[in-house]
Amino acid sequence: MHSLHRSSQVRVLDEKRELVGVFSTADALDQVFSQNLDLILTVPNASPPVCRMMEVGKYHYEKQREERRARKLQREKSAEVKLLKFRPNTDKHDYDFKIRAAQKFLSRGDQVRIQMQFKSEESIRFLDGEGLCQKILDDLADLGRIVSPLKLSNRVMSATLASKKVAASSD
Image 1 (cartoon, rainbow, N blue to C red):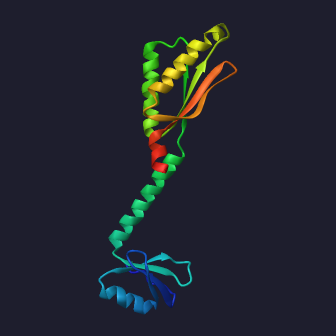
Image 2: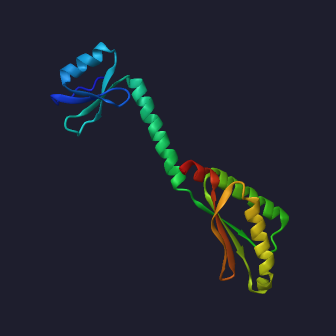
Image 3: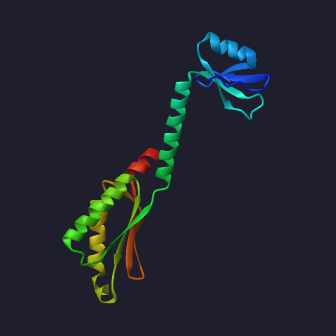
C-alpha cells in the first residue's frame, strides 16, 4: 500500500521510527521501492506529512498490538467496585461462596468492598463482626491489598480491597 499524497515533501521515518530525512514525495517513493518496502502515511496533518518506510503487514500488526494494549490499560484503569455484604451470623456456606466470588473479582482486577451490616439488636455483636471482617481480609490477603482499612459508620463496618495484580503491573 503506497500512500500517495498531494504534498511536495514528506518527512520519512524508518521501521524503528528514527528520522531518515525530509524528501520530495517522488524521491521518498524511489527510496522505498529500492528497499522493497512500502511508504505509509502516519501523520497526514503534519507539515510536512510524516511517512514510515516499512512493510504494510508489519504496520497493521503493530497498530493492532498498540490498540490491544490500550484496551487492556483502559480495562485495568476502569476496575469496578464489587460490593459483598455480610452479617455477623453469616453461615459457613454463604461465607465460602462470597469469598470465592471476591477472589474471582480480585483476580479479574476489580476492587472489592466488604460490608458487615449490623441490625439494631446485633449491635452487641460488633466484636464478632469485626473478627469476621478481619478473617475475610486475611483470606483475601494473597489476592488483594487493603485500599481503605476497616471502619465502622452507622452500623456498617466496611473495608475495600484492590487487586495486587493491577497494582504490580502499574508500578
